[in-house]
Image (cartoon, rainbow, N blue to C red; front, side, top):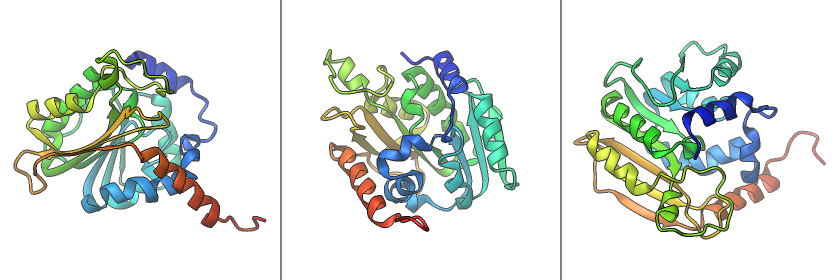
Length: 252
């Protein structure tokens, strides 16, 4: 089980030679993954006045988020990651940087966040960590604020005693899509979409992308849930597009 302490040790000790871009290679690079996978799923909520990014690593998605808001707040439990982002985005005066304990957002004023984002990071967070963040976001989101959180759904299989034979990519075995829905409800939030997906995991849908908002916000609606077993195929398609059209100057 990837605890907070294990996550901190893992990312403090990681080499980061490619700045995290290595995790986008299967999609043809970070830019292809951003424009092909992430932006189509969040574009309706962009731009936003204030964006909060949880667990940015070395800024793989921060580089795109910074151009979609007036104020960007990034928070990570790794001092190493935050210092790397400070160096990378030194010319950006609208970014605030925080190191936290892996689950608290007490440094933010209530109602101050218009969009919260985390992708390919909180999949390693166990249920207690995700619950703590959701509880905090119930207070920190603005009235019409929206959240976009990519988290583990491996618990759907572990709870049922299933033997997942495909790689699980260090997903948290205690977390599920249904758990997130319960945490949101307890925190004055409601889920408006949940895309349950595979991640190089064959038929096992070990991840979930949850979009949520405040109860009564202009975005509020009944939750729409889909089980997308073609997500890994989407990633492979982006890789093909990158090979076809992502030509570098001087490339033969």
